[in-house]
Image 1 (spheres, rainbow, N blue to C red):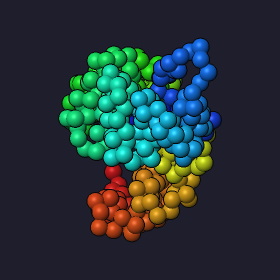
Image 2 (image 1 turned 45 degrees about the horizontal axis):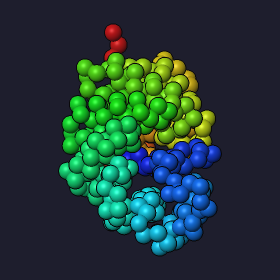
Image 3 (image 1 turned 30 degrees about the horizontal axis):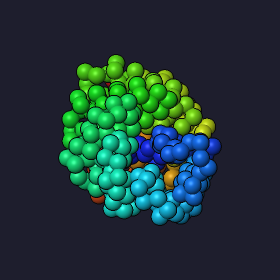
Length: 333
């Protein structure tokens, strides 16, 4: 699983700690006459920025609309209105606002980048790539544009170009975990890229040590790459950063089992099942662990629940096979 969300220039749409402040894209050029008192349009624009930083999208929209009405030549209000629409997933409206900003200032790299991200969301990959490439031609240091290009190349199944853009985004967005995380997940799927994948995942965990979602995705990737201890560390940290989650607990249980922490794994999977008693996959994992721990009765009960809850699925068929194996008396040597 990848974090397929594009990076917004105003704020990460990916979940961030509640205390984090939204990131405004640049600073946009300020007043035309630095020595003069701000105009009504400039005051409205500045107030809109403040409201956007506080997450008040409705208030920000109103102030940007006012700034746009007062000064139709300034591309900044149109751009920010596009970012408000983008955060609300109003894709056609966002596209129109970014195109409006570009009509006023064709060299606004940030508007090309945000337009590209919106076009990707609308399924227009070729147009998205063209817009994002124009953004990096104008401003090569625009990290969000490189990140969103990487997502486009992944959508095109061009792993080499996606990896190259993720690496560039990692360099430019020096504290952001998402480029490193997605690079690690991309490389983890390539058998000959294990070491590079681990390096990227470790960097993602370093940058995102306080972001539960980053840790929750890095953990399973570490386990699949044979780094069970790193998986346990990431998932234990994720477990402390929010309310109890059956998915995090289930992944932690599997990491602990792989790390040889069998008693802890059995306990974690039981906690996961208690939170999500109708999850057939968790019941199946619980059955495997209990069978491996020699707890036959518990394993049978878990596999029966997996069989019932996943009726008609391949997982249910596997549970049935395990039940048959457990019912067959062990042969004496």
